Length: 331
Image (cartoon, rainbow, N blue to C red; front, top):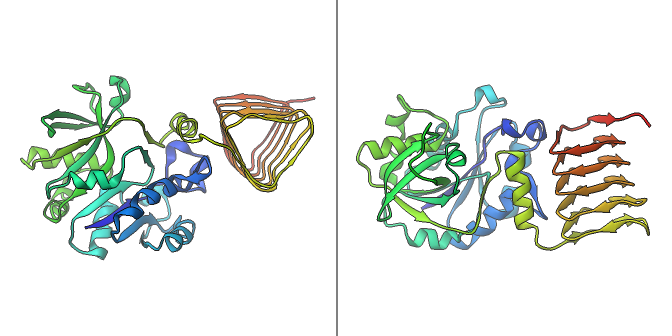
């Protein structure tokens, strides 16, 4: 068996933040999404590969070298050219050859141990499923109906739901099943893997489910990204920074090297402040601020602000600000 982490999407739902940052490498606490996945994968002792695109190849190359894994690069530079997840999976299989595969979506953070998941794998397709508890939320994903651990119905993004159990983007697929991708791609949707699973079940392929609890995050929106931060940031990580004697830091927070927290600023709880940021007389909580951003005389709550921005004299709530933006209100 080989492990294949799919990280070739352009994450348009999180633009403009992900316009120049691959989603799998976004920070969640003091680690990236990919770090959480790789720390789970490394205990398996399996050959592992990351599938990405040409545009983000340079971002992933150092991570591949750090973890000692392979890099599969699809030759696309723009959203309009992308192969889709199933298309990229086929591209990777052409390079890596026939085998059983553990396929993991690169924007997934999940609570279960992959060793336990693979202990349930018996040579037939196995998918990880999670109860989101809300029919409206379930409709955004592949909705699963189970009977004694077997998937009896799977519908990708249905208009109506029979269940709140959804497929989470972790699949163990035998070589025989993987070999059907060519036939599927003749007429099937090349993007969401759920359509491939739906097609398999209609053909009579028996698909089993591994159900888990605790937490699961698909980092596909600002809300899910910030919720993941709140769940996973359980202790502070403060590097070498400058702080004013009047500033207050409320844990848990992450504040990266070279940041300056000046004046009567309040940072936290649940704040990520990137390297060399300047925060002066501002309150920031439940938010992610990328590096080299300047924030003065502002209140930031439940927002994501990309690198090298300047925010002055503002109150931002539930906002997503792209890189190099300059926003201010008159003094």
